[in-house]
Length: 219
Length: 254
Image (tube, rainbow over all chains, first blue to last red; front, side, top):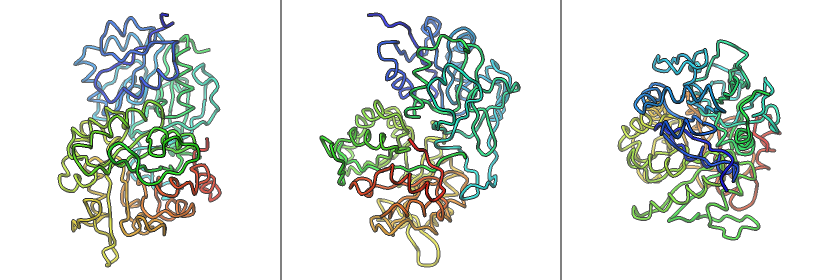
């Protein structure tokens, strides 16, 4: 039987995509075929696209250009159900403080670094960077990808930079470290998260399952 | 509310098998890493750490299929350490499904490996493991080779240096406390956690649940790692989290 849909996980050499693909396959079962690919045609042909990534923003943009994928990714982000993860979220924005580089500019906003050595009221008294571990996500906008996941569920984060959208209405999820930042953004067919759903156990698998069956509409 | 403190069970792997007793009821095979990892995952472990204690280089690759198998079924972060000698080793472990790789002796012998690995794969996946011992003068010295070789390095200064070299996290083990079940070395843990801006995992000496809480409250650790109290079935990860929560520590409840 032919799977109902094909999901392309974009492989542009930024980090290990195995866990993203494995988690997607785990939740998709026979519903969708999951393809890890750096081929522009395969990405264009896919029904849905996942844009993951770990590492530095400058390397990310260079790798996209080196593989000639900038336009393909930009188009996919405007056309079909699209999920950005971690660096794949940050790259969607206009500009990053990390290496002072431009992103894809699909979403207006900046990528900023957490302040170093900020004193907090938490145990230990010092803000550690990277922000690493399980933190709560407030679901500030109702969205099909939040279906069945409790508000303030914990997801796994590991990052030193966060996005600051120009338009607060883009914010779909909010997390405190120690101030509130956008841990998820949404616009039309596009959803992007700072945390790692593929490493966030039940809550993460639920989100990926929602993505597998998502029609790309906000409601 | 905010970031939760993490509880990390640690599994020692030798030649493809988990060693040290694991006494879970209902495990078909007490040494099977996948079964054990699934069990800890279901109990609410926040991450898992695999320490490869294989003596021979030839058998070292046996950990790769284990990591692959665990990563295919357990969707929480996995750290793998032991025997990492060069950036290529880091790559192989990440490709097998590790999310973070821990570097210990090599960080001392060749600190540039830490910088190179952080540059190539990102600081977020590079953990530097520091084994430290009381120097009898109010400080702590770094040891390598499983705690056998003194280095003359001051542990606090070394941790700061490793942060500069690109480490994203420190896994700190007190050699004096390891295996004693007397609790973490709290002054050591606190000195290092307060000195660096990256997360610190406390390890070595846990004998009861209050030790875990003390590591966080008094050692300022961001995460606590333990092996035997979980392996021998004395406490579950759930019980550990309930205990931390009673002490006002934020934890992920599942």
